[in-house]
Image (tube, rainbow, N blue to C red):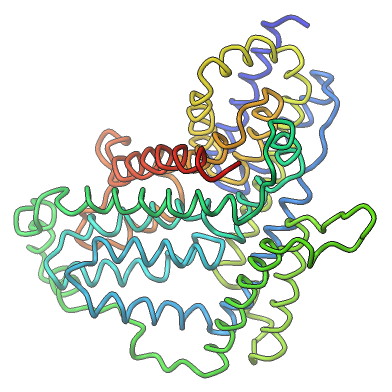
Length: 453
């Protein structure tokens, strides 16, 4: 096979990803479908398997979280978060990102940020704190936390059999959900704190910010900025909505217990074959979604209308097309590229972090990035602890400010301090994102070397 042809085909792959990114999540999926058909019928590549397991995990988690949202549980979680934030308003630059981080950790999706972001901005403004400081960091934190959530799709990709087999080949004992989270949770949490520390003094204070002062000159806008209050504290939360949250959190506890004690999910005594964690997450999420639905007075018609369900389905379609197209190319091309790429990356294994980062910038999905690049890393035999340590690099879509949570954050800031800059890349999320991801990866590499054995 001619190497130049493979390079051109790779450039075609990148071109299709870029074209799809201009249309958003669903666009990424269906435009990748065009690329897949061209790969198979024009470039004559054998089609790889569709990413069914990842899609089923996303579907199960999103369904359960959407039922929680329809039952009113998400509003209760936001009310609890707001109560904590308003009791400590001067610490909003730290507590705002912590709130969005923990919501993502518990829900397995970063899209709850839309509900709490106006509250973070309101608290900052009422305390004369530049809203960009907590809001930009909170948007980044909501996505960074996905690599630390026990029910996120990106984590379950790393729980696949292929990575476990590679770990055993490299002399490792076992690789479990708890092993992974023992690295990614502290690493990303410290990355978030480093980003928040930087954010404390970023930008001019409100009284010195020209854009904010210009907006205050308009009497209507001035009244809107200074006299409006975004809050959920006046909402009366029924007991069944609170119960929905308790049930949902119980599902996470069950998943962690099953990860800690694999003998519970082992049925074949002779072969000692445990049910894979990906399947466990699907089963538990569907089960507890059903429990919430039947015991918490959940209006079924509201389930597919919520933000969580719509965003989750978009992510599912995006991963369907992206992962299928990219798997088809790499399955076909890696035997030809393996020797050259492997020698280069094995000499400097940490450089694989840049590959993860670059792919994530283009395809706007951590799970899709992992599904696309992890097989490449496995084929090259990269150290598994390293792959766990650099897992936060699957989040790089803050780099180009076109992700829905970032765009929404800009729109939620009435002062104009959170913005997309004149030169596009000098936006509010760039430096916090770079600090958070680089710190998380550095800490993650160090922790993985100690904890993943």
